[in-house]
Amino acid sequence: MNEFCTNIVGSGHWWNYNLIRGNEAWRFVVILGVIIITLAAGKILQFILGGLAQKRKNKVGSNTISIFLKSISKPSNVAFLGIGLFVCRSLVVFANPENPESVGLDAAIGANWTKISLAVIAIAVAYAFYSLVDLVEYHLLKLTSKTATKLDDMLVPVVRKSLKITIAIISALWIADGILELQIRAIIVSAGVGGIAIALAAKDTVANFFGSITIFADRPFQVDELIEVQGYVGTVEEVGFRSTRIRTLDGHLVAVPNSVIANTVVKNIGRRPFIRRVTNITITYDSGVAKTEKAIQIIKEILAAVPEINTAPDRPARVYFDDFADCSLNIYLAYWVKPPDFWLFKEVNDKINFEILKRFDAEGIEFAFPSQTLYVKKDQ
Image (cartoon, one colour):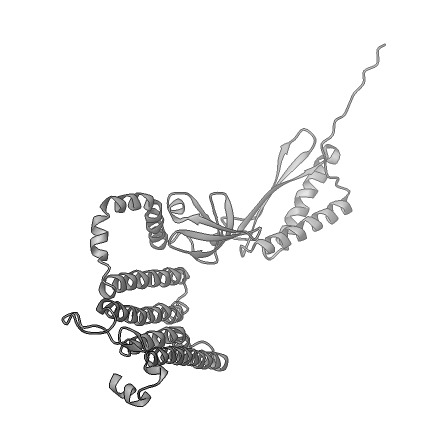
């Protein structure tokens, strides 16, 4: 190739000027041209693949082909750069290490140039595998969507992160040790003390990882279920390697370490079969027996007319004349709302409260409130 290019440019011109150790000016011009062409070609290919992926996604939605094209679009750009660097290496004259009188750049530069070119190509390949994890995630989500349980839905993000981390670590070690020959194995072996320190520092990370395994094995909750843990009440959004993310009722996103969840009490509110309400209806002491009995009868009639109240034999609505309090006669009221929807529970309470208020007002039954009666004794 060098002889061909020399014949093309001829002799006696500026491009034949010897710039560096037998390397003429034209070689560096061609190298610059090759780099520009490969960079432009990589960008064009990335644009074409990305455009095809987006076009197919807009037409039929996300599928295997669209995700595959999108995943390899950016790595192809990096691969073209590596190929360009590898081609440019053949345009440079390097000295022959076996011939001390040979002209050219140091042979070590050529060897490192080759390593860097291959490393860039290897990075492109690793980048492609890293991006193709999205394709694996897509098919896993299709499989998990066919099951009734959401446990496997929690497993998909963990598998995705595991694959990406594994690919990143293996690729880094392969490129550093296998291509760049940085003797990573020797460095790792010699870093025994540092490895112990890192292991001690990472003990919480390891504990959280095994905590996540415990969560998947024990299944105390699933994604989108309402739970209470460590005083936080919210919906489970994601279970990761280190923590479980909970969206609280206030809208805050709380990350609770998995090791904490594995070793503490978790209240799964989302799996309750009903929501229970217990309260006291207080009426005045001057209501007497008749109005007290009437109040209990009214409450029972109101509860019997609400279809959302659970009527199972083991949990019927309960209304009792419960206690003689300091300032009132207390009527104990308990019922269970089913299905266990929080806002439905609030609507049922609202309906019952208004109905009790209206019926009591119509019967002349007065609600009690804290009060004191003062008796004054006159001296004779």
